[in-house]
Image 1 (spheres, helix red, strand yellow):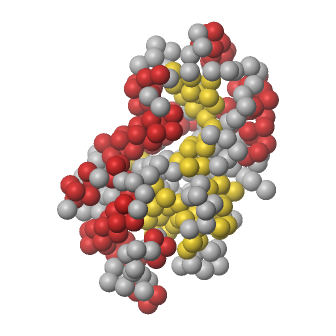
Image 2 (cartoon, one colour):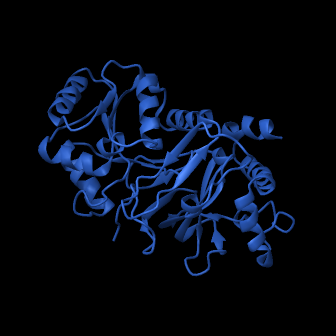
Image 3 (cartoon, rainbow, N blue to C red):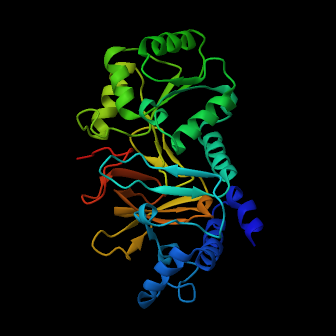
Length: 331
């Protein structure tokens, strides 16, 4: 059963998502002790496999994301190939995602990139992720590093704090009309744009979130407006990902995110967390089929809006949740 579940994750389309999610739900209930216990605790409100309607995504039990801080969330027993850890702060307990098969993560981000941006070999990829490069176990750094390698471009690579060299590189790439992705943590992009204004035509700016006391908190609109003005681009792209997920959604502007076919975002009522809908405003729940060996059904702490076509916005975090690397205020 495991091999058939894994083999079809990234080829799932349309209505096939429902069946795949149902099969993974059954698999994780049977092989994930923490998730099974959580489902059993919800048995009084009909959230066990025997009572859940497998044709209704909103009925599946969603595991609170905070469990990744306090428990080992694993489906089947295994020695992890990789452990991803959230950035957090010195006052917080970091989330840990035990990854059985790192190939699933690599397939997820490479196929998603190709889906949204085309062949990676057409791009020069530059990472501006100083705070993440300075620590181990970052899923974002691994993704950026692999995309850099896959691009094969001589100028692809990471930059720490050498903004002068970064500007020279970008100008050189612009002169060659080279399609370039500058993916950066928010505070680093703001620092760079503040001191090195540019007028970029062939460069895509992608912010991954990340303020965490480095700068004054800004709304997403303020961040994007500043970067657009200082770097001369029409849109700021964004990546929505987290330690607890092996898949990412992307925004090509206006903060509207779109998921790859193997990922779906739903919305739950803040006052009644078991009331889950396909659209509306509330707290975001994520189904990530790539999380087959951890938990595919995650109740996040992100507040946002899910639209009828499945796209979504992120407004911020619940008041009682920890400050995390990808937090941005939207007020």
